[in-house]
Amino acid sequence: MLKSYLESKRKLIDLNIELYLDKLVYPKVIAEGMKYSILNGGKRLRPILLLMVLELYGKKLELGIPTAVAIEFIHSYSLVHDDLPALDNDEYRRGKLTTHKKFGEAAAILIGDALLTHSFSIVTDKTKDVSYEKIVKIISMISRYSGINGMIGGQMVDIESEKKMVSLETLEYIHRNKTGKLLKLPVEIGAIISDASDDEYTALKRYSEALGLAFQIQDDILDIEGEFEKIGKPIGSDLELEKTTYPSLFGLIESKTILAKVIEEAKRSLDIFEKEKVQNFIQLADYIGNRDN
Image 1 (cartoon, rainbow, N blue to C red):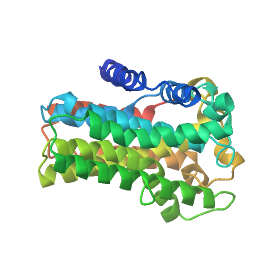
Image 2 (spheres, helix red, strand yellow; image 1 turned 90 degrees about the horizontal axis):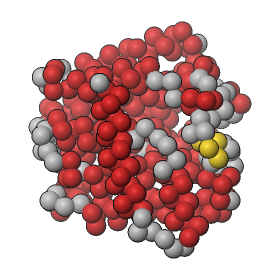
Image 3 (cartoon, one colour; image 1 turned 120 degrees about the vertical axis):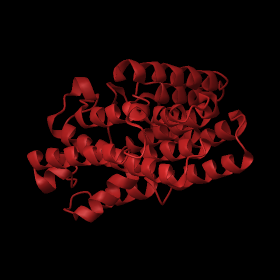
């Protein structure tokens, strides 16, 4: 049931991504690179999370689709830059050549920049029937969670932590910011658009924080146990870069135990809602903990 739900929402997001991208034609290499980078597969979990929250409150999906697409643009930009030689130096992403391998390093930097900056114009130009006050709040949150106090901050500490053993506190900072903030972002934005109560907002926020941590712990595990054909990139990159991970701190078995506890924490945070209304959220938490790509 969840699989078909996610697939239908992924198609909806991809349709709107293509609609926004079709208007970009020049400079050609940037336009083509943006399309290649963002339409190169992907689960679309971040934009789908925003739509899930809107559905929870019975809101029209159109209210959040531009922001959902913008968040996917930002996620794609982060992957383009993360794959660059100066960072992880990856050659494959989702089973295909990374953007810098396809278009060259200089073009990839600009393609990533274009995805990031264009995301804000999508929010401001395409969002309809959402108050200006909420749009300003959404833009502020996007810039904060994707910037120095979020994804960029986590990425920087991750780079600084290579080839050394760091504390659990530092590892959690990396995970909660580098990966977690961009999973937390769409849930909070959905709650803002939907006028969630303070208690509901807090519950959704806790759910998304646990979900983001679980996602990264599973990523750490997949770097050891995953298969290239499924995850679309070489196995063992964390080990090669000598990164501290949950398995390197706790071992593989204990990491899986911690992952299970985080998944349960995510699901418990939703107790404020009627259970039948949050079934997709509960199933998604289990999916995150069991995914193989």
